[in-house]
Length: 371
Length: 98
Image 1: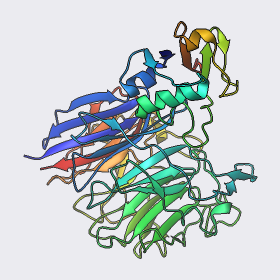
Image 2: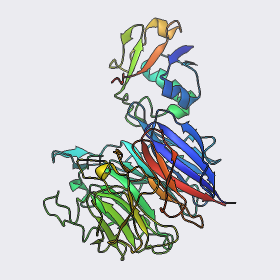
Image 3: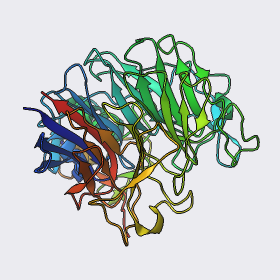
Image 4: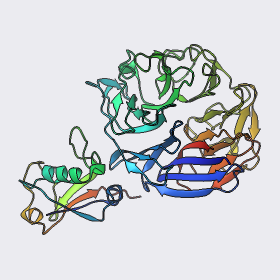
């Protein structure tokens, strides 16, 4: 019997939700780390009961927590994230040079094969790696010291490395995204990095198709097609079929192509999901209607999914790491909102139900499909 | 023994109550007390002060004997009532109102 375990990070703690494959009745366990901002909770594909959580507070800084029993018990582990060498500067909002300064971990990406190896994407943007279960962290410095890094500038949410994708067919390939520098790819386990932003156009930078400066909000990949990536940019939904060498827009008939979250169906590599958001100034869904949009054609042709979702007086946002898909036979899709709701669909998005209604603002959602 | 009062989130993190007691060898200063705190409760490393620079986290304050010691030299002796365990050393989170 398949069990689904949802890992939900919120502004005031983490919650673990579990259900059987029917995905109708959910047990909610939490809050874990009450009062802490939980930017991300993620499980090891190699050992699903090994979970990592990024918790932080303005008062106390960053704490990383680990569970070895699927989220029942947690222990604080290594929280020292020191940039390699003398960090130097990046650009600040006013275009002055600003020293690199660690603030928090946005995203934790466990290795596909080793439960003790995990990557951390941090603010100010850098990539760290632990090979001892999070006890200690070392920077992979060549990304932060890329020749373009002194020109990187933060988006409104900070200069954060928020997306880490590990290629299941090529253990040396890592793809990351940084707001608002862009996307980068390494084909040598993080030793060197190439900006992969050709084809992006952003009207909020002086040169709209510059190599660097694009506010990439999130990337998604289907494991069976690692060269195909989908991107929700600040504005525009984009697609590449050559691992980021070139991108083209697939926003098509979306009501607005601003948004944060994007994901790919577990069994259909051309079926993708986004949640359009009104604009960069109005971070809530358009027209008071919470609508997930699904494309079954890899983009361009989109259909609204509304059954079970509020269609009036709704003004929530869905953040970049707050959408996930499970691997059950009938693919489940999940997302959390800044209003504290978590919605689930057990049928690829055809219909939805709220499985939690009154949590703190949701920052992240991951799901584990457990045999 | 030196008495140290912690803010609520740090009590949970360390798995302790409102007050902890610490053995401090040598001079009782803010530095030696926080060193002893972090040694006894490793989960608190980096949460009261930056792990590398040892700089106090900006939204925390250090009080004792009705005085704000937050910006006092870390190696200055703490007041006698703290050093003798009569008064606690207070680690206090800045007020988050609204």
